[in-house]
Image 1 (cartoon, chains in turn green, yellow):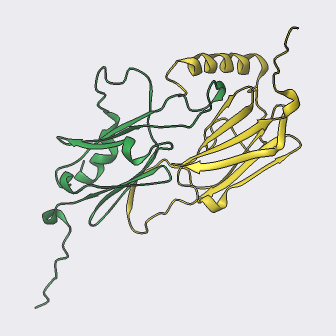
Image 2 (cartoon, chains in turn brown, purple):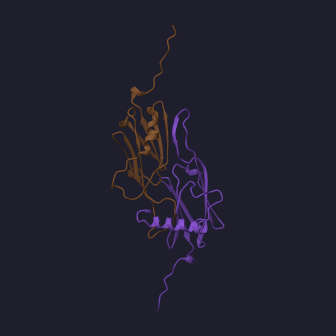
Image 3 (spheres, chains in turn red, purple):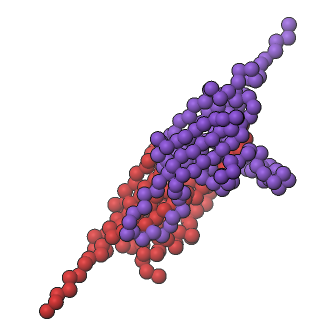
Length: 132
Length: 141
């Protein structure tokens, strides 16, 4: 396996901190792609506002999590629910050529966008072939 | 909210039971929608209103098309996921395209008193019940 596939395959081994969130959590749907300068991740996290979002890198593990906030009238009773938890969490393993100090996060209409750049020395360089 | 009390777990159990027995959810789904369709929906009620929540992040706010006809609520919209040319994709899990979900409403909804707001990727449609059907306290003289 080369470095490229690590982020895509390793995430099945999600790290779940024991005891911090006993109730079920939602695994947000993601799109992940890579270009020359880094990896971009889009995650669906409806109901998440900036101050309730937590993006962290511990060791080589990137975790996105947060709690959705839904406005509800007092005394509301549930009638039907596709969504049955408010806590989002998903983790990914980063590979060494990515720079966790430079992860950039933005949030628009409940979609989280993460940009994880590659370290300078890992960006692909075009090698000119000298024709003698 | 939904989920913290375990109420919804119980609800889902009942729902599954009902689907098993009757073959469909208590809400009429649109012919084009499916139970796993986008966006996921939660519905709650109070004595005064019915609240429908569409968990639809990243939708172009101008594309929302919400209507009520013959007591059926229809909500449509568009989400266009920007795909980067030339990039290698590892995961494409997110819904891309147009969607529509429809629901039969309780009979006592006033179609004139509906409002909708879209915040943090959640569309909240509030449907007021008709005045005549709200519970009234009867005084005993």
